[in-house]
Structures are given as structure tokens and as C-alpha cells.
Image 1 (tube, rainbow, N blue to C red):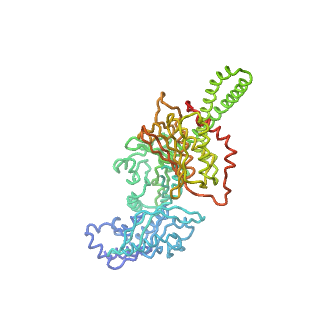
Image 2: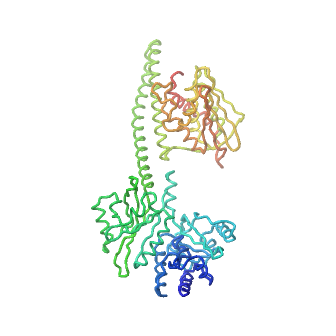
Image 3: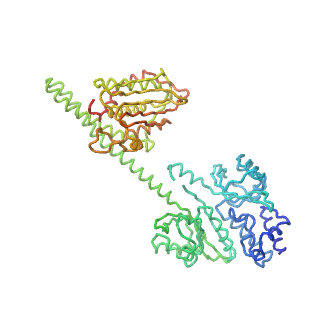
Length: 609
């Protein structure tokens, strides 16, 4: 027994992980019975947690020093074949071991890394160093999962997710840490682009030259890899599954008994002939292994999930292929997001083309109508002219209504495609809002609705797009007029609170029911969807208002009580661009006629004015 412990100390010390003292044998003897000591003891952490239990799991065999060295070499070879970074630090943060993957990422040799201070020379996160110091002092527990960045050999920052465990001596004192790291840079980039949903891309690239005993050691280690969401499979020459890890398959619903020993064809939703030919090629030394293979896997629940596999051949000492080792990641969500992106792109292109085709004939109709009005005014007597004007007004209003709908469709597709024309400049927000209110009051001169502008601010310069602020105000005022009656009040306020400017549009109209307030900012959401509803509208005006407000870095909300009226409140950041010429009222005056034209279009579905 002493000889075995001596050999174990020599192997573990050669890894540079932990120097075992003479109390180690007593520790094992006290903890395990003689029968239990028939197992090859684990103590460090292999593949994140497994090296910590290396001498507890492997069977004790009557092996010689040379065989133990061979096992150590096999283990090192396995670690160096892995696409996962394995890192061992002592309690001071000094590197005691790093595998080949870690060296490749840093672009350095192992001897250039081992012995260096990790948090000084490589991961310059001083917070992690202070965390390690507190863990060593026993002030806190080490978190299992952290994320951090490493600079690779090309100078690029790589985002790494770390699974970490502490190494302790018999007395429970922290001797160091062991970590397994996954490069999740590509996964994080995909999540940022699609407000969606997650990907983990790491795999073991090659395992070779192992005898049966080496394979058993690998399988024991892979059992512990249930902590990561990577699927591991081993397929033999008979195309049957001889090993899989439960953790990777947890979302598929199968137990080990339901998978091990079964044909791979039972689970793959692919043409059986094509799949059989593909597996045969994997066992053909003359055929080159594909870098990645995608297959559809049937879950126990009847659903289909897509898995991306990385493949490696398992060989014996003579170089003969004994099996195929596969590491896979579930990319179902990623594929769904890619398909959704493509669908959205096609939808944007369709609406853009459709809107263009609709706008062209409408412009021609509107031009013809203007020519007809000019002819009527010149050639008809007053009585006939007035009679025909009633009809031309209806035509003009409905042309404007269609143009408004088309403009909204075009603009919402442009916003979706990041194509919308948006220009931020410094403007007097009080003056912009007041000018819109005055123009609307002039336009509604025949209405008994009272439109009031209130503000204690004579001037407030902020960064905004004046044209789009006008569009926001016109839409909100259009809604206030549409859902109020003659004699009602519409109050527009501009005020300042903290670092924000607030714009409020309040009416004393019919209000909005509580359950309907949740959908009015959704696309095509309307408080009343019936065909005999009181007021017309497409249900996308407030959607565009919300998008335009958010493009300013602001927010919009609604307060309403059914039967008493509604209040829409816009909050904009009170910021000013530096070295920017302030736009004064002169420009607003130039745009006055354009503003009147926009009022006609925006108010086109209000028939009683």
C-alpha cells in the first residue's frame, strides 16, 4: 500500500498541481474501508471536478511504475486534446498547470506560463485576485461560475466562462483552484444581435492511441462533464452507442439505459441510407473527417432538436479505429433565430416594395385631383363648384389617409431594417412643441375643442430630431382629437424633472379601458378592433411613436381612466450635443408649410373636422 501511495504522490507532483505530504495515506485510511481502497483514489480534479477525485475512482491494479507513468501520459494527452481550457492555480494565483488549449489561446508555450502570476500576466482582473485571497482566508466560498476575458495570440479579447473548484488539504485549507474554461465569444456575439436567445460552442477535438483501460478512464472523466451542456457520444464499429453523458442529454429526456447499446439510427431523424454511409466513412481511415456535422435528434417527448457535432476517431495502440467520439451542442435555438432573421428580412423587403408600388399610383391620383380642382375653380360657377368641392374633399382626405398608412408601413420597415433617416441636432424643444400646437389650433379653427399649451419653461435646448418630434406630437394630438368630442379640452404641457424633459398630451375624451392599455403600443394593436368602431385607424401610429421616442433614448407611457380621458407622457433625456449650432425658430418658420401638409395627412382619418 505504501508503494502505491508513493507512486501516487510522484504522479500528482509531476502535474505541478499539489505536493502531497506524509499524512495523505492516513487521510485515505481514515476515510475509506479496505474494500473501498480497492478503488483507484481520486484527489485533484480531472476535467473540472474529476482531477480532484482522480485517486478515488480508478480501480487499483497491481501496476508497475512504468504503467502508472503511461496512465499519467494518457491523461495529459487527453487534457491536451480537449477544446476546453484546464487551469490550476496555487493559493497565490500562480499557474501550476495549463493544458494545450490554454497555451494555444494565449499563444505561449507551457513553460512560459507555468510559474507566472495569472491575474497579473494574463487575466488582469484584480477583483478576481482579491476574491481568491478572501477564499484562501476562509472569508467566503468560491463561486462555481464566472466569466472573464483573455487576450488571444492575435490580440483579440475572448470571452471565457469558467467553472472553478477549490483544492483543499486534509485540514480543509485552500491550496489552490482548478478551473475549466469555455470560449463563449461567438455565442455572446449571436445573443447580442438577436435579443434572443443562447449558444455554447466547445468540443473535444481528438482522442487517440488509448487502450481499453485508457478509454475507461476517459469515460469516468466524461461522467463528471455533466456540469456542461455539451453532448458526448461514443459509437462503436457496429454503429451502436457505447457511451453518452447524462448532462448533455438532459433536454432530450433519455436515460442511460435507453441510449447505451442502441443503434444511432434510432435517434437521428435523417435518411437512414445517407446516415449509414456517413458513419461508414467515419471508420474509413482514407476518408477525411468533416469538421462539423449537423443532425436532427428525436427527443423522448417527440420533438426534434438540431445538434452540431464535432467528431474524432478513437484508435488503439496499433492505430486501428475502434470507435467515434462525438461532442455536440444543441443549436436548435440558434437555427430558429437564423430562420426568424431571414423571415423578417423577407417581410421587410416585401412591405418596402409593396409600399412603393402603392404610393406611385396614389401620387398620380392626387396630382390628377389637384388639376381637377384647379379646373373646377376656374370654369364652374360658385354653386356647382361648392357642390363638387364636397366630393373632392372626400377624395383628398382618403388619399391622405392611404398615404398616411403607406408612410407608416414604409417607416416601420425602415426602422426594423435600421434604414430610417434620423438626424439628432440641438433644438429648443419648447418651441418645437408650441409651434405644432399653434399649427393644429389654426387647422382646427372651426372646431369647438380647446387646445391649450402650458409650460413654465421659456426655452430648453436638448438633442432631438425636430421633424420626428413634430411627427410624434401630431400623432398624439390626432389621437386626442379623434377620441374626444366637441367642447372637450386637450392640454399639452412641457416641463422638466431631474435630468429629463417631459411632454404630456392630456384630453378629456372617452379614455382607454385598463385591459386595452397594454396593447396600444403593439403593432396593429387597437383598443377597438371591430369593423363598426367609432374611429378609424390602422393601429400602427402609436407603435411608430414609441419607436421614435426610444430612438431619442426616451420612454412613453399612458395614464387613462375609461370615460374620463387619457394622458400620454413622453420622457426625453435632457442632453445637449457639444459644438453643435442650435436650430432657432427661423428654421421652424421655413418648415411651417411642410408642417401644415403633415397635419393634413396625420389628421386624414378624423372626419368631423
